[in-house]
Length: 149
Image (cartoon, rainbow, N blue to C red; front, side, top):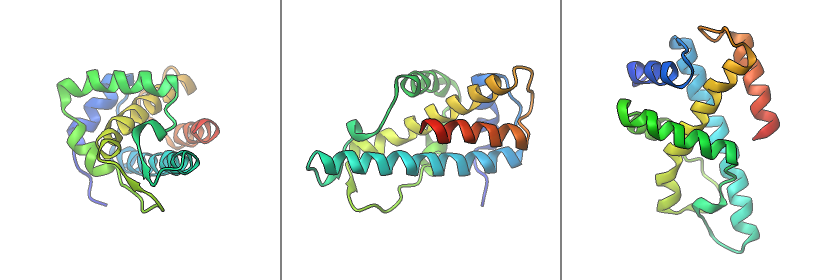
């Protein structure tokens, strides 16, 4: 996997939760974003199908209040570091039974950014003195997200 936007992602984690990350963290972040986005889209597809639609719309995405707040925090951070183009490349659209609307495609980088803010904040909740996430921090954070998303 080719790592892209390393300086922007490092700055993102510093601004989101005062964390220093390394290349291994960036690889795990890419995997995290891909996995969580896929799971959100599978739920969105189920919502679209249950509403009798053949396309996934933004309101099908299961965005919680907390994730919405993290998306808002992401937008503030993005104004200074311009992470959106990087997240667009990281946010993969898995093939599902239904197609994605253009609005859904456009919104996914913001969702990914919100997930990134939530992840960074989760590290802080797991260990309030953390400087650089270690494997055990990643494992615990992934367990938390598995419970919630």
